[in-house]
View (cartoon, rainbow, N blue to C red):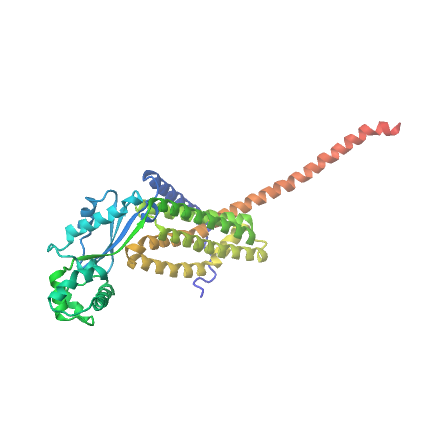
Length: 412
């Protein structure tokens, strides 16, 4: 499919505008990074805890943040999961020895702020063993005949029912358990008497230690740099060295601008963002290679064209492909950014920025660098050719002078 037939846009005539835009974005991003002391790293890189909490009703994020911030030192980040009554709570952790204390403090704070006030154990936080220990004697007093093995099997069925979607660890009434085979009204009455139903449940609690966070951060930097180095080698082998340098500089430019925009908009960088950056590196490089490959093909058939004109023609010839590929991908990641929720937001934001910046850098950054490099090489070749005749003339004069001095001896 070809959107533009015989396109003849003067892209290189507008290169100064986009190079100026890139300079502004780079300076703004680097200034933001300098002012804020570097990127805002997520828990993956600086260490901390990540807790998924599901509530029975829509949670009050500000109330959760204020309650936890008063008890837990450091930054507390509360992100809602769109379309659910679930939040993701991230807290800092300065040492791995703080893990148990952080877990206990979080649970106590949530329980005192949002938990039931009747003093009964929360059914939502119970496993099979705890449930059996709590209700075994009350069931016997209620004349519910059941062996320990039968009770354990029933407790396993009850907890499995509670933890499967759409309940996902949270029920609103014990009467819902009547759907579990073997649960009678008498058992439900015992559960109501002995247990309570808290308004929330902790679905997941994860730890990333500070040492592991530093290692992950270093590995992420190495992975990005190795990807750039590998692509430089590939393009230098596939095309010429100047092509590889132009492509890698353009991709490095894309990465710096993306990280700078993360700092400007105060978005954190985590492992998913690193994955997005590596995706951006490959995507931008692929777009650049398509343009460079067309330039190489046109060099064989348009030998009379000047190199800048040939590059501009090549960009126009690949314009339809660029718009179709980048446009469709852009629509996809925008939808992911708008509707993907807070967990995917940094990843999709990096891709949205990367596709925009990566597409124009292939045209307005990589191509001008290539032209500059080619002009530099050509000027050096012309200088070498121009200096060669002069060197030969000097050699001839030297030979003549040497011959004149040697002629009297020859006469003798």
